[in-house]
Length: 365
Image (cartoon, rainbow, N blue to C red; front, side):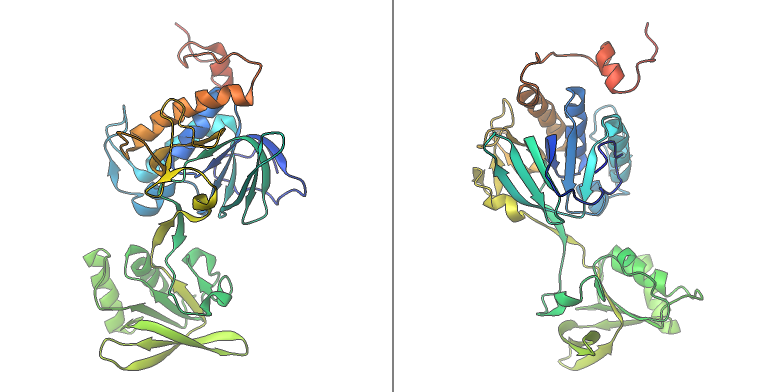
């Protein structure tokens, strides 16, 4: 892995031996990104792991274009704008991102460090671990049809961008929100490389998407550019070990069979606590109990910041999570650098911090 890898880039293939690192941050949402920054100010370099294929967490997934009004000194910004700014802010510290994967293994080693293993085979040995997982790892909402998962990444996809070229294919889209509607509209726009057919499926004839976009979808259906079918998927059929059609139970009790080449399940994401619940950390109502002096969990050298933690007076606000990152970073500094004094320095005046931030030529009054 390239230790100088910049924010937002995928990590390279895992090495055969675990890589020694100062810190592992689990979660690449706003709080996780600010944790990277606060650690960097204390000369602690971080690797970041997130289940999503991109950084940003909830703001990017759930409200990228919606305004946020309670970030100090920023009257208004979008979810995506906030993430972009945080990415730029922590970039001088060259965090290494391991995206599209979850932590499957967290085990203390004989020397006191932690072995951290991911679902894609990344293995890190960290002095400290910071859990900034929000309400859990975001995973796509699945259909619950037994046996369908064997077609994942070949004919079944949870992101339209992962499905590859769809021209000439029979495409079935499942979902009722903005993502599903926009995908259906994009594939039925009359371009030369469009699919052979586009069918949108939802269990009932109502949608959570913008009404104007839904109206355009219905117009496309009336024109024959695409089709909408209300119903619940109950099974599927294969031909030569490939997914060939799905069975649909309609609201009026009838059953139909829909042929397909590609199945795009765009039902949004749901958070799951996942393996965190099995790590032996003290929890209360599915949240990690922390010491508010350090934001340490019940396991020494493991910290929890943001919505994943709980304590008396806890408020699930970004600004509170940012505060927690600062105290957690200062608590981690003597663990990572046991022979250095932990000094309180100000970014306004500290030459050392200017060098770390690559602003050492900044104007000085």
